[in-house]
Image 1 (cartoon, rainbow, N blue to C red):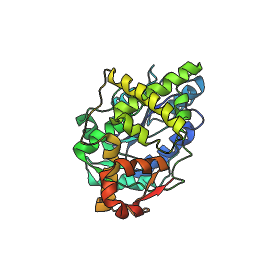
Image 2 (image 1 turned 90 degrees about the horizontal axis):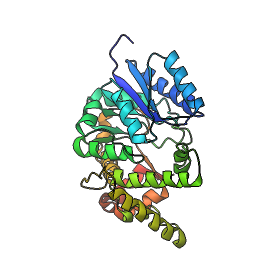
Image 3 (image 1 turned 90 degrees about the vertical axis):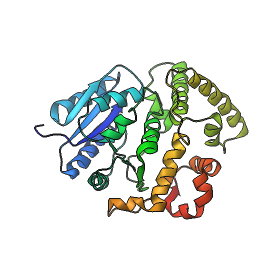
Amino acid sequence: MGTEVEVSFTATNLNTADRLPRSLASIRVLGDSLAIPYEIVVADGPSRPEAKRLLDEAARTDPRFKWVQHDRRARGYGRRVAFEATTGQTIVPFDTSLEYDPIYGGLLGRWRALRTDRMLFSEVCALSRHSIEATGGWRDLVGGEDVDLYGRVVEQFGLIGYPTSIRHSQSAPLGAYARQMRYVDGSRWGRFRRIYTVQRDQIIGADYRVADVMAFNAKKTLVRRLAYRAFFTLAAAGARLQPIPPIHLRQNHYLLIREATFRSMLDGTYRELGWDGPGPKLLLTADEVTYMERRSPLWAAEHERLRPFYEVK
């Protein structure tokens, strides 16, 4: 490229082909809007031929694009090997199944101008290389790899929260089940094993108890809640047997990130960015609202002040 890369957009991919071209195109728009040298680094596991063809084409036609191949189906491992191939001091993780709105280029630029180790939490997140390295980076989890890292970064360095709730800001996301099935080829048992492994690692990554994941499903029918409790208990037992332990912070990682985001909006620290985009607002699912009502001390103490800063999907 001839110049030192300043921003590294990084992702892990497996079998995502239908959305990949638009996702990469949107990331190029964000990078171009920054008007500084950037790179796009995608680690790809054992994908089907169509996804590999698209990644190979991107690597051959775009000098800013790096394709890192590996042979594992773990998202955390993919995140880690992609990060290790980056050179920028600003790291912007993205999802190859999502298309990002150009408006976030301005937000990224304003966050970089602060030269801070505090994480930017928005529809597009950003972290300093220093904060990732200082907290140990992504761990080899099958699921929950981002909340695992982000909780550690927020605990040590803090967060500037500027979600926007722009409904057209990303292409329609895949549901949790559909997303994970992209990682599976084979039998019904293979699909169940994948969902079990993801749930197990989400418990590790977020440091959840069974009561936490049950609280996300409080409005389900009695029969489904009984079935979920058995499944989550099994996943929690499996989590205790894994060589990667949960990292205990002052709260579970989900609550830590959510409360830090709301505090940033309540305290007005997001104004440090000086961004002229839409005001901050966090989109929550109905299950997340129920969870916050049951588990969040900040929600209990400040709910009336929080009302302007969130919206239910």
